[in-house]
Length: 136
Image (cartoon, rainbow, N blue to C red; front, side, top):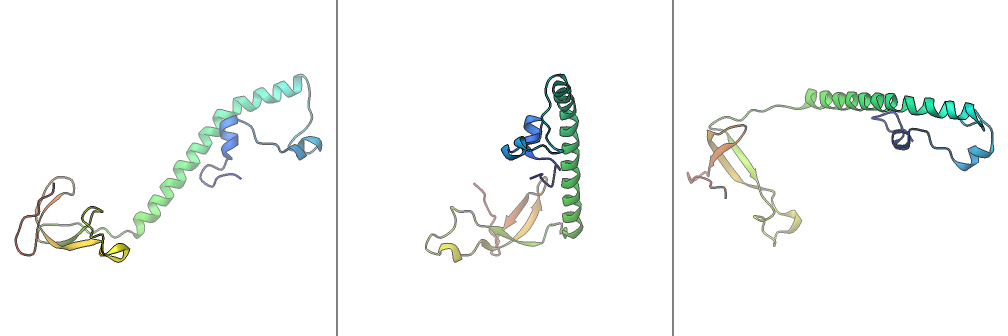
């Protein structure tokens, strides 16, 4: 089956031809014909010449689909920039989770206050009691 993102089957992109099932080989149809000799060689060479073009077109369709998905996501995503003074919840790591709580335990630590902004979305946090959060 052709993939939605590329419009081609994985087999045709790897082996440069469409797959033919044994039933189609025995029966003449438009997709497969029993050619022999020079005409078969010429059509095979033409298929090989078109393989790179098919791969390029599949790559273009795949990039286009990814851009459409990105635009769809970005249209609905709500950007909430964080600044000094905001309160945030910090995700618990697997090591900091209590094993007795099981899968129904909390996924977040208590609220923290942002006291300073570092580079590229990193922040210095303090607890509600005023203690500085130390990351190891």
